[in-house]
Image 1 (spheres, helix red, strand yellow):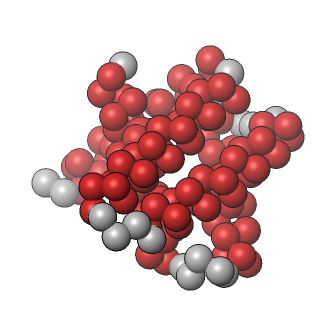
Image 2 (image 1 turned 90 degrees about the horizontal axis):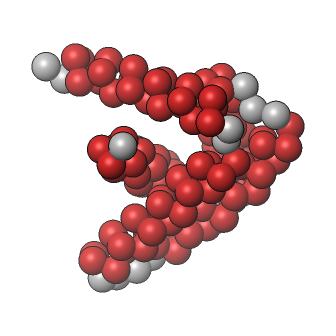
Length: 122
Protein backbone atom coordinates (compact mmCIF):
# COMPACT_ATOMS: atom_id res chain seq x y z
CA UNK A 1 0.00 0.00 0.00
CA UNK A 2 2.83 2.38 0.88
CA UNK A 3 4.59 1.54 -2.40
CA UNK A 4 1.38 2.29 -4.30
CA UNK A 5 1.04 5.70 -2.64
CA UNK A 6 4.68 6.50 -3.40
CA UNK A 7 4.19 5.44 -7.02
CA UNK A 8 1.05 7.55 -7.29
CA UNK A 9 2.84 10.52 -5.77
CA UNK A 10 5.77 10.16 -8.16
CA UNK A 11 3.35 9.95 -11.11
CA UNK A 12 1.55 13.07 -9.92
CA UNK A 13 4.83 14.95 -9.53
CA UNK A 14 5.91 13.89 -13.01
CA UNK A 15 2.53 14.98 -14.36
CA UNK A 16 2.93 18.31 -12.62
CA UNK A 17 6.40 18.80 -14.01
CA UNK A 18 5.10 18.02 -17.47
CA UNK A 19 2.35 20.57 -16.99
CA UNK A 20 4.81 23.23 -16.05
CA UNK A 21 7.32 22.52 -18.76
CA UNK A 22 4.78 22.06 -21.54
CA UNK A 23 3.04 25.41 -21.23
CA UNK A 24 3.26 28.97 -20.09
CA UNK A 25 1.64 29.66 -16.68
CA UNK A 26 -0.62 32.31 -18.24
CA UNK A 27 -1.88 30.05 -21.02
CA UNK A 28 -5.37 29.30 -19.66
CA UNK A 29 -6.58 27.69 -22.90
CA UNK A 30 -3.92 25.01 -22.67
CA UNK A 31 -4.69 24.58 -18.96
CA UNK A 32 -8.32 23.92 -19.87
CA UNK A 33 -7.26 21.38 -22.51
CA UNK A 34 -4.98 19.70 -20.00
CA UNK A 35 -7.70 19.59 -17.34
CA UNK A 36 -10.10 17.98 -19.79
CA UNK A 37 -7.43 15.48 -20.84
CA UNK A 38 -6.81 14.51 -17.21
CA UNK A 39 -10.54 14.06 -16.57
CA UNK A 40 -11.02 12.10 -19.81
CA UNK A 41 -8.13 9.73 -19.04
CA UNK A 42 -9.34 9.13 -15.50
CA UNK A 43 -12.88 8.64 -16.79
CA UNK A 44 -11.63 6.06 -19.30
CA UNK A 45 -10.05 4.15 -16.42
CA UNK A 46 -12.86 4.32 -13.83
CA UNK A 47 -16.10 5.74 -15.33
CA UNK A 48 -16.61 8.94 -13.35
CA UNK A 49 -19.99 10.46 -12.52
CA UNK A 50 -20.72 14.02 -13.61
CA UNK A 51 -20.30 15.30 -10.06
CA UNK A 52 -16.93 13.52 -9.78
CA UNK A 53 -15.79 15.06 -13.07
CA UNK A 54 -16.76 18.52 -11.83
CA UNK A 55 -14.95 18.07 -8.51
CA UNK A 56 -11.82 16.74 -10.23
CA UNK A 57 -11.83 19.61 -12.74
CA UNK A 58 -12.08 22.16 -9.92
CA UNK A 59 -9.30 20.65 -7.87
CA UNK A 60 -7.09 20.12 -10.91
CA UNK A 61 -7.25 23.88 -11.51
CA UNK A 62 -6.03 24.39 -7.94
CA UNK A 63 -3.36 21.72 -8.40
CA UNK A 64 -2.02 23.37 -11.55
CA UNK A 65 -1.85 26.71 -9.76
CA UNK A 66 0.07 25.16 -6.87
CA UNK A 67 2.48 23.44 -9.24
CA UNK A 68 3.05 26.67 -11.17
CA UNK A 69 3.72 28.51 -7.89
CA UNK A 70 6.08 25.76 -6.81
CA UNK A 71 7.95 26.03 -10.08
CA UNK A 72 8.68 29.68 -9.38
CA UNK A 73 10.46 28.98 -6.10
CA UNK A 74 14.20 29.55 -6.36
CA UNK A 75 15.23 27.21 -3.55
CA UNK A 76 15.36 23.68 -4.98
CA UNK A 77 14.40 22.01 -1.69
CA UNK A 78 11.42 24.34 -1.21
CA UNK A 79 10.38 23.79 -4.82
CA UNK A 80 10.52 19.99 -4.43
CA UNK A 81 8.71 20.06 -1.08
CA UNK A 82 6.00 22.33 -2.46
CA UNK A 83 5.45 20.12 -5.51
CA UNK A 84 5.41 17.00 -3.38
CA UNK A 85 2.83 18.56 -1.05
CA UNK A 86 0.63 19.62 -3.97
CA UNK A 87 0.84 16.10 -5.41
CA UNK A 88 -0.06 14.50 -2.09
CA UNK A 89 -3.04 16.85 -1.71
CA UNK A 90 -4.18 15.96 -5.22
CA UNK A 91 -3.99 12.25 -4.48
CA UNK A 92 -5.88 12.75 -1.21
CA UNK A 93 -8.58 14.60 -3.12
CA UNK A 94 -8.88 11.70 -5.56
CA UNK A 95 -9.04 9.25 -2.66
CA UNK A 96 -11.96 11.22 -1.22
CA UNK A 97 -13.83 11.51 -4.51
CA UNK A 98 -13.45 8.00 -5.96
CA UNK A 99 -15.42 5.02 -4.73
CA UNK A 100 -13.59 1.93 -3.47
CA UNK A 101 -14.25 0.13 -6.77
CA UNK A 102 -12.93 3.09 -8.73
CA UNK A 103 -9.81 3.21 -6.56
CA UNK A 104 -9.18 -0.47 -7.25
CA UNK A 105 -9.73 0.02 -10.99
CA UNK A 106 -7.38 3.01 -11.01
CA UNK A 107 -4.69 1.15 -9.09
CA UNK A 108 -4.99 -1.79 -11.49
CA UNK A 109 -4.61 0.50 -14.51
CA UNK A 110 -1.65 2.29 -12.94
CA UNK A 111 0.01 -1.04 -12.17
CA UNK A 112 -0.54 -2.19 -15.77
CA UNK A 113 1.04 1.02 -17.07
CA UNK A 114 3.93 0.71 -14.63
CA UNK A 115 4.57 -2.89 -15.73
CA UNK A 116 4.37 -1.89 -19.40
CA UNK A 117 6.78 0.99 -18.88
CA UNK A 118 9.25 -1.13 -16.94
CA UNK A 119 9.26 -3.72 -19.75
CA UNK A 120 9.91 -1.00 -22.33
CA UNK A 121 12.91 0.36 -20.43
CA UNK A 122 14.61 -3.03 -20.17
